[in-house]
Image (tube, rainbow over all chains, first blue to last red; front, side, top):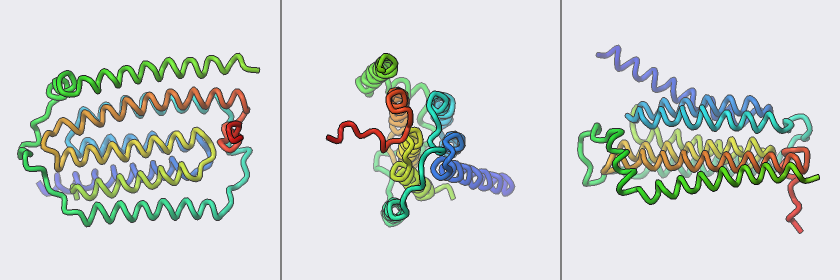
Length: 174
Length: 102
């Protein structure tokens, strides 16, 4: 039992480390391809975190949609444009310092709020965490959240048509 | 270890890294990657609150699914805009796109 606990803790720490490392790789290097690979690493780590949060379904969806579709789409975008890191001079130090300060302030504020607040479970919450199932999610999607579901599909349709139009019309410009 | 605050801190870290990327990258694709990080931080928050605090354990997962769908739409539009800008300016440097400045 203790070994199992230890293994779980180690896996949790490894997943957190993967996520943070991937996010750092996604932001800091200048080569854009490294950024995409780091993003894929971070997204896989977040899928692992979803597993620890008890949702196998969302973890699968994360791997399928984000790692499988969005990262590949971004790689296609890189393939069709010229990498930027060869042509741009370094950015001025004060701008970088200001940006870093703003982000650090946001991080400190968010962590303070997360630690100082007395989080309490909502009163109507049952103790049983295994109450949800994929079936229940499907039922909710088709009853309580049906309008949102339909609107999301409409948004996706409009976005895809808009993408085709934007990318297609730009070809005829001189 | 498996507490609510752990997840909140990870998500705050991801959000700050994404914010830093948006503020200091000049490549449009780099900014798109940072936006993905921001959306994922928000998603992680939704899932953590859903797991530890919410009354109905299915609601947060449905919201996470919606955010994923919106992120897919956003990437499609963003990539087509990047393609159009690249054909016009032959670069993905965001500082060159200033025709609307007046």
